[in-house]
Length: 127
Image 1 (tube, rainbow, N blue to C red):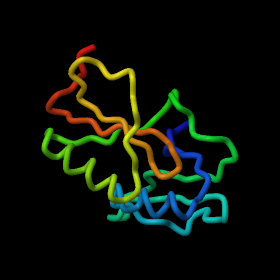
Image 2: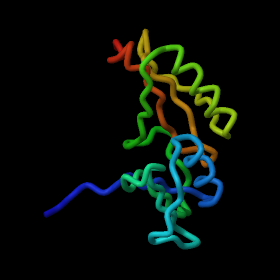
Image 3: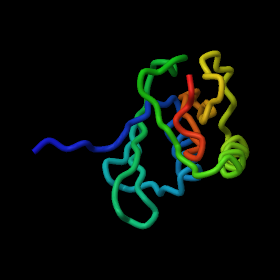
């Protein structure tokens, strides 16, 4: 039976990406399938895989067709998590496509891969 595995993010620097995403999402690196070009990240409680990182030669897309949404429950939590992610190496993205009252903020990881931090108390975004 076909099953969905986990998202894979293409990155230039696998170690840097692993450092960022393990700290950002409280994940741990697993030894499973580990190589110079691949890292599998799991949930810290051992409940399974969460994310994989794969060495990529292509640059991050400016407007990716697929991205991660990281969820929080309140606007205050969103603000705090954004500050924490920025301190870990994320960056703000100048995003021209925000709706009038967005529930999300677009950031990029250290490799430039875009992701959103979504405030569920304001979702869905009006647009």
